[in-house]
Length: 534
Image: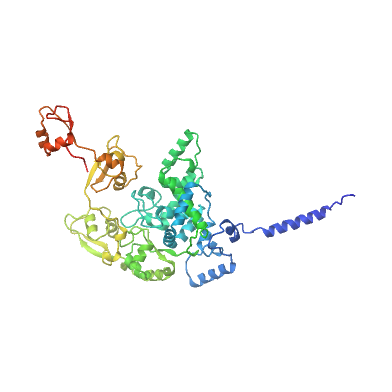
């Protein structure tokens, strides 16, 4: 039987139909829709349908009210923030012993995850906005959980502050201003920008490896480079999981991967997610100049405690006289606040007092008297130097309310009363040697001097050692209990003379040195002349 051949026109017709069907089936937007996300994260609690009508309705309401509240382009896809955040995940999914250990801890502590969600709720939208805009993996929006549990006033013994835990030097390097009035490391918006820039820099430095960039964010670039070189010399892999890094860093990256996995599969782990809306909760409002925070709270119609809560970067009763000149206000209160601010006379922003300079007074002493800063007095009086002349009148900015009203205690580091001595580091010294010499723990010594236990000491550096009652246990405590004061016997010495010199009794000398001494002692002999140190 002869085969039948299909004509060329028929083949072309069939191909056209196939292409048309394929084009209709493909998602024309090129973006993952909610069904795709559901397949990737099947247990996520919130999935929203894309509704053009919703988007138009929201936009219409916004324009009618005249509000400047930002409506993100992605609102049409996600009414709740979690699915939007999960769609930005980009770190490699890893399941090993270290990740599983951290995962188990999070699953066993659902109360902790609820607390961090409550703390994150006001700030998470802005963080996700910046993460998405800068094309950074979405998991990094959860890094403050690992760093600080989303506590803006979190502070480490190495003087790292804020939800991103910047130390002073790195904070200044990335533009975070720090002074008596204001600490940019606690400014959620500014510190998030700085953290993203820093992580992007580390990402480039470590050949686009996000896990190595995160490790360097925790322990420093030098430590990671050193571990990589060590593995190269030994012919070993140089990925994060193969490097010999500090213990804290070994747990740091797995902890972020674990908490990201918990939120991606919340239902599977029986973790409830708070329905955080995919809308800005807070708004940054420009104020133009220094302002008393009590006056600002009054204009915003909120308590001073709540204003400090949303503006954790401010440490005193007013904003920084030299800026930044903005305040973070709840979105629903921002418009009334702007209206009242526009009507407020300039002289009511800050209360001013006249002060006549007395003989011997300096800018610092005047500032201390009125609980303000020398810079504020300089700016108000347009002074070019710090020198004051007796008899001159100064205008000094002062708080509108009694300082107790501002409740500044939570924002100041508590002062500990304890005796302290200073030690100058010598060649060959280490934290371990110095800590042992003064019977303190290494962690305490590092904390008192705002360093980590891995910090390299340089000869000549002055260290503070506090006379605290640190309890040292274990092997070190056992060895310490056997240390005595020593003395080498000289010609002409006797037990009586040695006892008198060291203010002890002959009986004690015999007890501490038995059975090494008999009736007589001899020159060159080493004696214990003090009891065991405690």
